[in-house]
Length: 65
Image: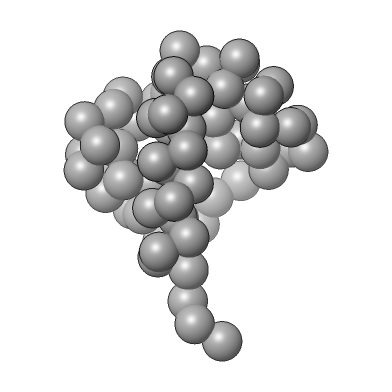
């Protein structure tokens, strides 16, 4: 589902936030699968604040168009 670039970005975010990469991937897969934010964080072992930080870090890394 991810390209190598996306995987590297998720690894960097997980490392920065000191989170398990598998939980970060699980949360992102749920979000990309069309689930709501609530369902996404309920579907992994991360806290709501950790999930918000993940989305914030992804937003910071999005390419500027």
